[in-house]
Picture 1 (cartoon, rainbow, N blue to C red):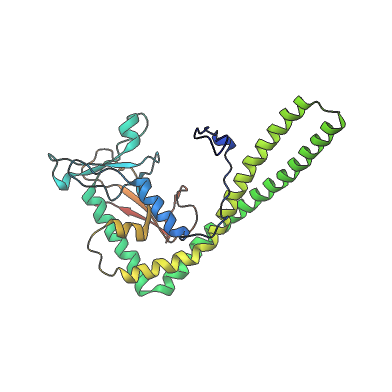
Picture 2 (cartoon, helix red, strand yellow):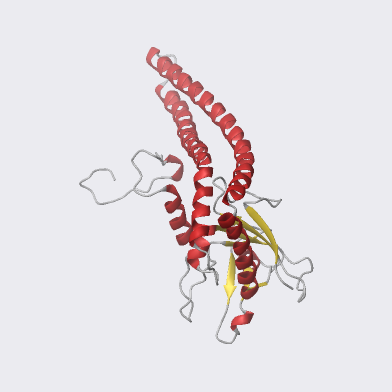
Length: 291
């Protein structure tokens, strides 16, 4: 607003918005914040039968990255409820394929895989800890190196921009540069610098989060000990153990005998959970749906 006395608000362009993170002490942990964001990201209104999809915000198409949506209705038997790629629904077969998967099959595969990994974490915590830390560290080291190199380049460019803007100002004061020319050049450099500072802040947060790997692994082990009996997949179980599920198309499209391949990402990976992951490790599980 132009003044605290005026009620009218002026919309600011996204490129002019500056975000300053970690300037105050956190009220809640970063992990809890991420869980809440995950909940609201996938939240949908209850359907006509009053139910909300528990997998909303967790299940994605492995090929196009779109969310997958549950199809159910009064005329559909519960055992025939199914998930379908959102990209296929909205953009058609030229964009992606259906990725049809029954909800009951998804529940069965996810529950079976959760029981396996939580059993390992519960009964062999040291072995689980070593495997999780080893795989997490390999991925973290690679990303840390890339992030630090990028951060170094940005900081160097930021210092160069400081010098450029200072020289422009000196030229303006000495009269070697007109006011209009100075304003035009300075605005461009200042815009680049503000965008760079925002990117530097994001990189700093990423590097900080990479140090949380051990905490996430230990939390996963504690949650595994607290959830000995898992009779079904509930929203609470999903929030505790899973960050993302990717569904691949069947090897034979529209086949009634061939199941889908799933890639399950667990919550004890502290770094980028949405990056493409092509090989199975202990923090991700490939599972084949039953035929």
